[in-house]
Amino acid sequence: MTYFKLKPGTDWDEVKERIKERNIYLTDEDLRLEPGKEEVLLKNLAEKMERSPEEVRIYIESISYNKDAAS
Image (tube, rainbow, N blue to C red; front, side):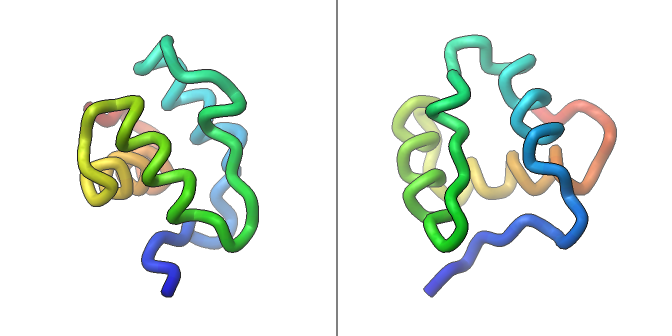
């Protein structure tokens, strides 16, 4: 079951760049989002960011829903 979805109309490239600005060790490959494989992205980022997948999901959603910086 997919429990992570970007809101419709969210530009992933823009969100990805915001994430990279705050986490300079992440690469484009780390942030590659393939349709239907959101859980894979969350698990990989959770490992790299030393957070839980749920924390990463919240982080990404905060960036995708807001123009302001997320921590």
